[in-house]
Length: 105
Image (tube, rainbow, N blue to C red):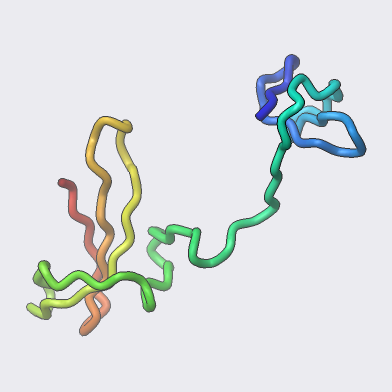
């Protein structure tokens, strides 16, 4: 990975030179290593935690109880919401009533 000398943003390889994704600064590649760029992530790589997120098809938790309806199954996603030395947050959606909540470990 190479970073821009002008603004510090990540650069990508374009027509044999490195181009800043933020300011457009161009520079020679500083490493002989192969650079891999991706434009987007596939569906299984995305973590959806927004209110409108579609949890269906995500992993299922059976160790939780919904506060709204008492059902014992919920879909969940995990996201690191604090510093790296803190445990991640689990976001749940009840399979029965659709109620959403989060759990901090």
